[in-house]
Image (tube, rainbow over all chains, first blue to last red; front, side, top):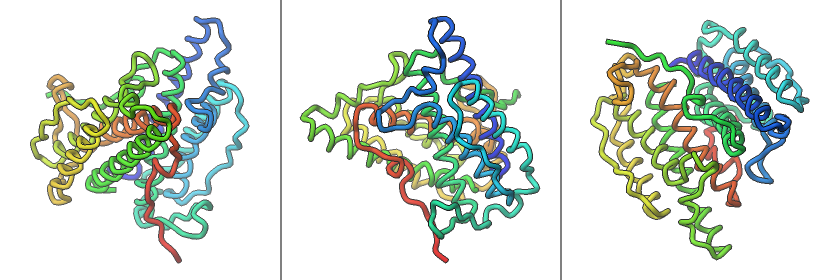
Length: 169
Length: 169
């Protein structure tokens, strides 16, 4: 399971997330409400709303790709307010992930990763992916999904998982 | 990022989950309600309740370890009804994960994994981990966490992530 595999899994899941937002938009139209109500929805008063869950999922993917690929993370300010803007944010993130190639990730397991929030400490690249990026990315993606499910959007497990490269024979 | 690393990450997250259940039990006592009310709680009427989220997280970890480690998955019937029983289920799963060693996982990337629900198709071991086990494990763990948060249990992101092997210097 290479680091490149994990970055591609993040990209796949962000494309799935874009489809959940598409389904939410269809649902809002069918119920005659403004889909951007869902952008502010949350599961608990002290947990982030949908907007911030999507921004955070994007950031987990972006920073993992940047730190492990040895590239500067592009600045994507958290200014989105609407579903349309959030879907653009996802596309911006996907475009950046495309610029990080498998060859950039050579040696990433042992790369020193020192994000500002670690206050001067650092993690091995592998540990950053395992203990930070993977759990947090799926945390925010799943919470975004859960906020939509909780509000009645017609989503199922296959929307979450997306396509699976199963083989015959 | 070895397959063994991922199995250990699942184990770490299940130990975190056990702590969330501990916090939920304390919260229920402080509010004088039966914690097992939370066992039946869910975020949407057509989504699984907390019990099934925990059982499913355990199963994703168990099957990944069994399939990739070339061991028969032990049978853990979904009979739990209470928090006490669910915490035992987590411990049973953790005990099984301990029996799958890094050496069992040699060559797991190319091992053919053919779970019954694929109807005769199969996945490369790496693809099973990436496209099935990792996203689904964190889906169920996060949804379990979200059900508790939604019901007022005092959980924060550090409870979700747990300890991080950051280094100094």
